[in-house]
Length: 200
Image 1 (spheres, helix red, strand yellow):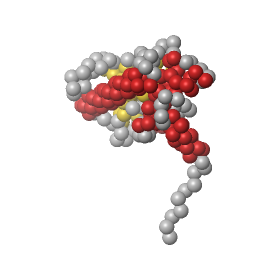
Image 2 (tube, one colour):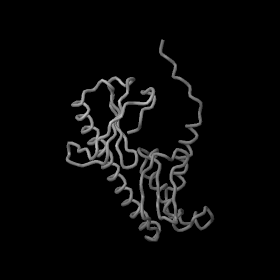
Image 3 (cartoon, helix red, strand yellow):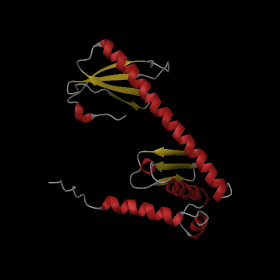
Image 4 (cartoon, one colour):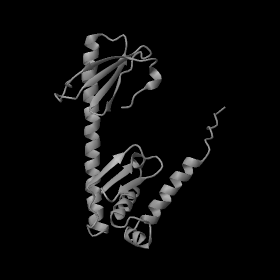
């Protein structure tokens, strides 16, 4: 989860608990609690390096604070576990696509979803063997995700977008359809927002 800077004013009150333990028995690193006078009911948490930051209302008791630390540690752990499983699925899919369309020659060291790519659908760092796909692709048709993944796999073999690169992608039968879908998404995002007319 992300911090909520709009719900706090001035320097928040802080306390730190080292090695806090969640309900599932997992031991976390240091936990920093930040109390806010502006925060009324909501509690949120996020990772910052090896620490966990927990944002709570200033009025909470010490018992409530301990309980919410445990709850939020469990919630963060569950989210991170789901992301790990999603990345494992993506790595498996990458291996299948490489085998099917690139004779298994593209072998990335890591393949994962990321949330910091809003201007591109995917990226590849050939020197590191890493592939990252934008979370914006999640929920799109499978053939579109496969195309973007295959596109990045091809970059492990051919860094640029020359003829050799496109020859690799010609083996994927839905290349043009997937590109058309993504171009349509981009075009739709650029349309001005027009509120729906209200029924009289």
